[in-house]
Image (cartoon, rainbow, N blue to C red):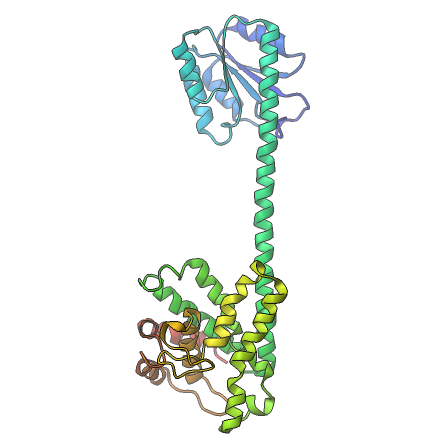
Length: 366
C-alpha cells in the first residue's frame, strides 16, 4: 500500500497531545496496522516527512504547538507528503470546523468520541482508496515514462535514418561531408535570425528549427543517381550533362518520398522537410530556378533557407571545377542576389549574420 514502507502492514500516524488518546488509538489499530504516534504538530511533520512515510494520518486539531489545521496545510504544501490522506479526529463538532478541515485537503472529519468498529471501518476504507490512488498514480508515471522512452526512440530512428541516407551522398563526393555539416549550421543560423520576424515567427518554432537542422543533410541526396563522369567532371558541363546534373533535385525528392511511403504517413512526417529541401533548394525567388520554376513564396521556406546556405558554401569552397572564393566576395554575390535568387528577408538575415557564417565555414573546413 505504501511503496516506501518496509513491512506489509500499512503505517498509521496518530497525532494527539493527550497521552490517553494516543494509547487508546494505538490499542484500537495496532493489531492490523503499524502505528506511529506524535504528541504535537512539529513531531508529526517530522515523522510524516521521514521514509517510510505513513499511509494515513489521524490528526487532532487542538494542540499546543501548532494546531491540526496548520499541520494539514503544511502536509498538503509539501510534494513529499501531499498524497498522504489526512483524517481529522477531533472533539470540535461544529460544521464550520469540519468545512475548514475538508477544504484544507482532509479526506474525512471524525468527531470524538467514536466507536472502535466505525473508526476501523473508516480507516480501512481510506487505506483502500489510497491504495487505488497510488496504483493509478504509479501507472500514470509508468505510462509517461514509456511515452518519453518511445519518443526518444523515434527521434533516434529519425536521426539514424537521415544520417544513413546522407552518408550515401558522401560516398559519391569526398567534398560533401564537410559541406553537409556547414550547410546544416548555416540553415540553423538563418532560421534563428528569422525566428522573430513577423513573416516567419509562427513557423520557425524551436522544434521546427531542430527539424530543419536534421533534414538539411539530405539536400543533395539525389546526387547518388548522377554518373561519376558528370558529378566529378573537372571542366564545364555540356548542356546535356547539365540537364542530367539538374535531375538530382527530382531524384532526391523521389527517393525521400519513397522512404516516406515505406515508413507510413505519421511516422514519416519528419522526412517532409527533407523532401522539400531536396526538390526545391535550386529554385530562385524570381522564378528562374529548377526543377519546377517556382517563384517567391511558392518555394517552401525550408528550401529558401537551404538555397542561400548551399550557394554561399559553393562559392567559398574548392571544387574540382573551381577555386574557393573569399568570404567577402561571396557575401557580395549573396547581397546582389537579394530579391532575384534569394528571398529578400533571408538574404538580409544572412547579411546580418555574415560573420557567423564565416565562423561556421572555418570551424568545418574541408
